[in-house]
Length: 64
Image (cartoon, rainbow, N blue to C red; front, side, top):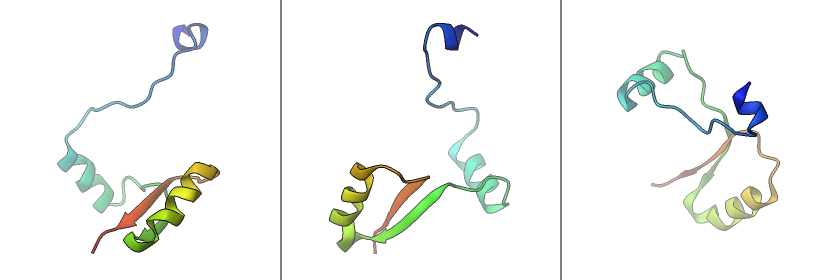
């Protein structure tokens, strides 16, 4: 209730290691919210999409 009354927000928490998180993703226990995957050469278009909002998830840039 304190979070609501104080208008605070929880941005993130870290209760495990990066390796634990990677293992959970690989096991299908966690599904990353990826809205779109784009190539590095399309980074300008990616920034336009990010600034426009409306993405439900992360935008991933693939770097060869």
